[in-house]
Image (cartoon, each protein chain N blue to C red):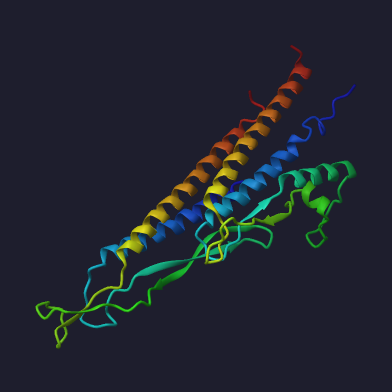
Length: 133
Length: 136
């Protein structure tokens, strides 16, 4: 039963990482850059199942962080110190609505796994006390 | 009349083992609720339990090496695993994930409750044994 702690723990870890990328995306939603390549692109983690063995799947692994391929907006802001020689700046392609939804989803998933963790702990404690009363 | 300690706990010992296994499967489902392509699985408790009971009465095969083939009886009877079945989702999502959080959470809560019930039954068996040994 102790493997359940690993499973729930890995899922909580993965959701926490998702929460981190979401925080980073929201924080950088208004970041501008003077080049298109340097513009901030929304990041998102890629989840994958850890296969402990064929019969029993395990927890969650983060395979990497993806950068959004959506086009970055180009704005004419000649007054901006970061503007290029034509007066354009490149914003980030973060979609705040998407990020908010992601944040709620990650937080709910984290809660579910924390609940699994708690229930398992209670059951294990009860099992340890078996036959003592 | 003698008391057989092997049989004193009855069906509850195996039930506890299966409940624990199902607990792990459901925990894995909940953990992978956001993993693309993950397919939710579950144990059919009734048939696994029936199989375990059959294994007990027929004396399931014992494997002494990891290379031995597992019979379904051995798997249910020993420390092996019951057959995992894939869940049919009510509303499959586009990314191939078939976990439905509300279903998994309901099943998880139910399984935890039944695990505790089995624990209570086992505790009862133990106190009966104690009573038989020590007298009132």
